[in-house]
Length: 219
Image (cartoon, rainbow, N blue to C red; front, side):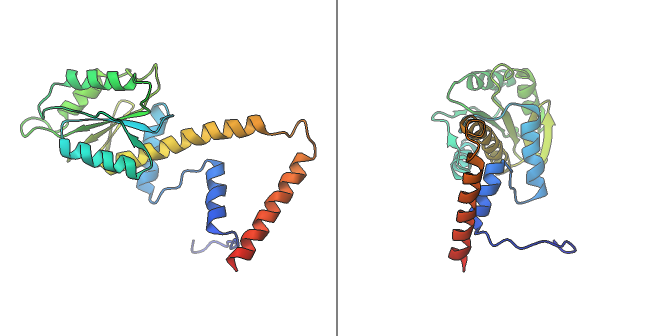
């Protein structure tokens, strides 16, 4: 950044990406997306599985959500649930409860297109309010999209987005955090530091060799 003195690294981009991934950092393009990720992870559990269940009252947005989920490296649930535009909040709430208790599902994406008459956000707030607390036992995060609504708002612990892709991007980042935590725990369990005092010097030597090979390759 302008005004900051920084030292340029000779590491190849692949090595830099691996270092950041191993540290568990979440890399995003904008401040808005950083805030979006924080809204997803701060009030609910992390999506431990990559499968995202879609509940929607719009077939078109449900298809868009499936495409966004696949593009973000996640997996759309095999059977999405779609309802009529004026379906009741209780039907939405029951569908959310059913999906958060599905052992294959890691997260639930609720998409709501308001009817032509009535409050734009009354339906989605009623549905999420009726389901409040339904994910506490299983820690499956619920994220909602209010089509045509503000870019970000919240209903309790559930973040409500105005765009499908923003919601999916935040879910993908949250799943990345969950995956890193599992991988980090496995690495920590496998570290031989206590039993082998020479392990650290050997590892340092390997890192230095990899850096040297990367520098040679980048010249």
